[in-house]
Every structure is written in C-alpha cells, then in structure tokens.
Image 1 (cartoon, helix red, strand yellow):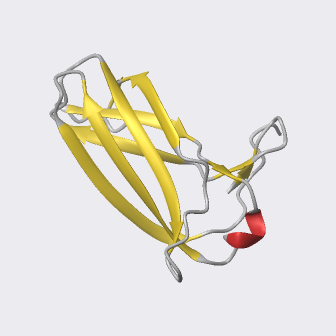
Image 2: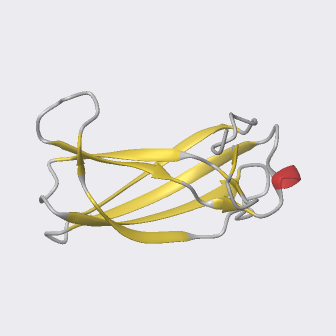
Length: 111
C-alpha cells in the first residue's frame, strides 16, 4: 500500500493483457478482504491507453499504476486481500483475473 500525494492510501497494481486490440482498455479494479469477503476499496473504473509490455514481449499490452483507494488502511494492513480486475479492450474482448496477497506499507509515492 502507498500513501498518495493528496493523503489517500492506495494499493498499487498493474495488469498485463494478452493479445489485446490496440488502443484503450476499460479496467475495473476492486479489493476484497479474504477473511470475510468485504470489499475494502473504492471501486476503480477507468479507461486508459494500453502501453507496450514492460518486459518487451510482443502481443502483450499493459496498464501500470492502477491505484484503488483504501479508505480505512487498518481494515487491510497485515491482512490477505484479493485484487479483482476485469479488462475490456477496444475490440470488446473481456478478460479478468484475481491476485491475492498480504497488504503492507510500501514507499510513499510523493517522496
């Protein structure tokens, strides 16, 4: 989790998309506490341009720096959460995934 420049706390994540239609993609992200299924983030729903894969792999697009807001950090610190992501590319193809991990503080994003 990162402290943002305007005082909010965020879970920082990125997605990689296999064989996307070039252009933009709509990304939806929500964070759920595993122990009880409670959604602990403000839902994020954005349309952003696809980037080239940071690892240089052809046929893969990426969107980095997705930062859903965690309004009450104590609800997630030290706890296991699942980050649910769905992506719809410019051609209408839909994909989704879930990443699970334990939340801890990372570096401040504003230095």
